[in-house]
Image (cartoon, rainbow over all chains, first blue to last red; front, side, top):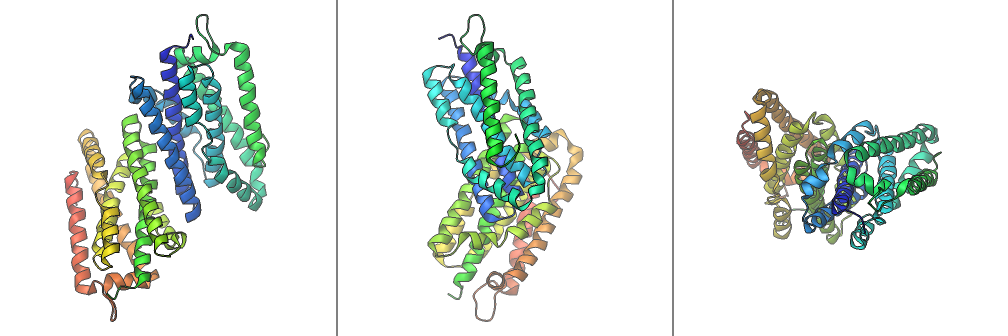
Length: 219
Length: 219
C-alpha cells in the first residue's frame, strides 16, 4: 500500500472541514426558513453534520494527528467557496446543501478507495447516507411547484455550485501535494492515475446531473 | 396554584423558540469566524442549544401539548428580532449571543418561579449554565484589546439589543394573554404583579449591565 499517512490525514482534514461547513450551511438554511417544521428538520441535519465532524476530529487524534491543523488547513479554501456561493434565499440554500453535500460525499467516497481499509471503512461510514435528501428533495420540489419560473435561475445556480467546487478543488490540489498524489496518482504512490481520475470526474458529474434532475432542474 | 396549564405551555414555547434561535445565532457566529478553534467552540455551543431545544419539545409533548404549535407561535416575533439585530461581523455576533442568551435565560428563570415546581425545575435545568460565557467572554475581551476603538460602537450595540428585546417582549405580552398574566399577575392568577414586575425588570437590567461591564463595555 503506497498511500502515505500524510495523504490520509489530508483527506480526513478535507472531509472534516467539509462537514463543519455543511453544519454552517444547514444552520443558515434553518435561519432562512420561516416555519418551525423546516427549522427543526434543518437544525437536526446541521447537528448531525457537526457530530460527524467531531468523529473525524477523534479519528485524526487517534492517528496521532492534530485535528485543528489538519482540518484548519482547508478553512480558507472552503471559506472562499462559501463566500462565492452565499445563497440569496432559502431555496438557493437548500439546493446548495443538497448539491454541495452530494459533491463532497461523492468525492470523499471516490478517494476513500485508495486509502487503507480501516480508513476507508471509517470514511464510508461518516459520509454514508445522512438523511439530507429525505427532507431537502421534497422541500425543493414543493418550492418549485409553487414557483415554476424559478427553475431556470436555480438550474444556473446548481451549475455555478459545481463550477465553484471544481475551481476550489484545483486550488486544494495545488496546495496539498500528498492529497493530490492520492487523487491523481504518482510514480511511487497508489492513487487514481489520470485515466481513472477522468473517469471519477465523469462519475461525479453524472451523479450531480442525476441529483439536479431528481429535483426537477436541468443539469 | 393559580398558574394555568396554557401559561406554562406558552412559557415553554417561548423558551424553546429562544433556544432554537440561539442555535441559529451561534451557528452564524461559527460561519463568521475565520479560525478552526473558534468555529469548533461556537459550533459546539450551537449544538448544545439545539439539544436543549429538543428537550423542551419532548417536555411539551409529555404535557400533551403540540411542540410545533407552542414553539412555532414565537417564530415571527423572534425572526423580527433577529432581522433587526443581524450582526455585521463576528464581534457583534459574539456580543449578541452573549447578551441575548443572558437576557433570555434571566427572563425564563425569573418567570419560572411562578410555575409549578416540576416545570420550574425543568426550566432551571434547561436554562442553567450553558458554558457560553466561558468561550464568548474571553473572545470578546481579546477582540476589544486588539481594537479598543470598537468599544463605543459595541456598547451602543449592546444597548440596541436590550432595547429590541424589550420591544419584542411587549409584542409577545400583547399576543399571549396567558403568558402576560403569568408575568404581570391578574385578578385570579398567580404571577408577578406590577411591583414585582418592575423589580424583575430592574434585576434583569442590572444583570445586563454587569454582563456588559464584564467584557469591558459601558452598560
